[in-house]
Image (cartoon, rainbow, N blue to C red; front, side, top):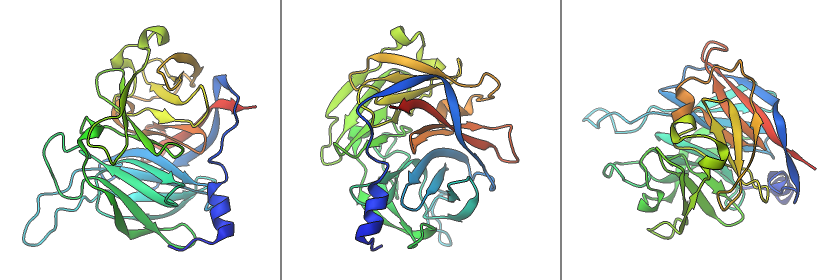
Length: 291
């Protein structure tokens, strides 16, 4: 997909963040996206491309076993919505998506699959892939290779976040407070960050098991969903607890948000509110205010 200089400038706009920001004591709703299609298995994370003003929501789901009549491609879909939360289109590139994000360095929408680390054995179509788009941001069924499986990501179900400034990934490990720092050219983690759950007054089973968002804001880089206490917990890059933003107490996050149904995009924490709408509704919450 060719991108003009003007469009490239628009795509990069919004990826830069102010040096200072403050945590909102109470989260503010920035957008609601009612799902118009039943998720193929379960809705995972959310991406945003500012130049197209499009949100992208990826479903996850294992591929069927290959046969003489069917290739082992996942039936999971990816869905596009506009800036008001209106449905645009869907595609089936064939991946069991875990994380979807916009990469301003490659200027592409990318997905990280289940078992990117081959933690539970090698399977086809695992790794990092780019999702093809039309010139106006609609999804296509085609895709490209970015990188194959890499054991540095750790847990098979991890939903890594991407830091475009350092070209690194942050892969939260399940049942704990460890975040592995990954550079895809290395087969081993670069470092390990320990989130201070004691200072945040949470246990590992209170929070999202496999996802921590990257905000890009200095000193407030990590955003973690506290499912049980309905709050966004903020940590810095060293893992130090910085503060929290309260989510509405009437949200029914349920168990699903421990394992999927979340994301961080367009400076918002996304959580899936399952009871709202036919198939659930993603809420985008502003939890950090730019100064």
